[in-house]
Image 1: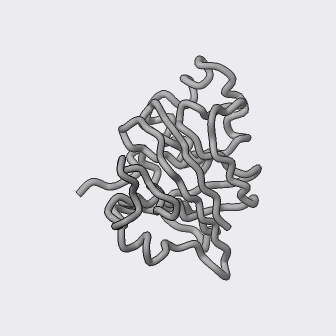
Image 2: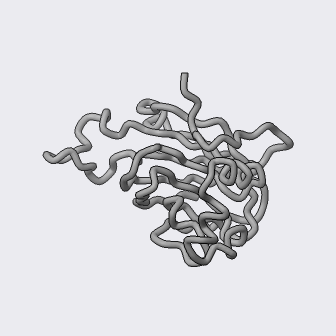
Length: 177
């Protein structure tokens, strides 16, 4: 199962998040109390209700969310692997009522622009990959914009948890060399 769309942030960070966990976020004050500091974001990542996708950069990006099953795990395609820049270590996500992918500033009871992800209830491993779609020949128009059929900027792989494991909880999504 796959879902895709363009998602924007003006805060330099996106998140895959659990709607029930943030129903109490109803205004800027409650958002700030839950999500402003890195320690808050790490706490939510440890609880499995937020997967930070931290770019330290604003913008609108194309996301593809691929959901696997125990019989057919979600993996990167051969094309995505060819243009892969980096992948994260797995994060834990505990779904109780689907998931939402949005800019971090849109997390809350009334989310702003977002991509809904109808994720079945359960414990999921989430890996985030950056794909350099611009490196694939012939899939940009004259202005450098993607043509139909181009790869996404980000691919998220969601797979059912196979067993207890160690999960990333860092706010910085990707390990720097």
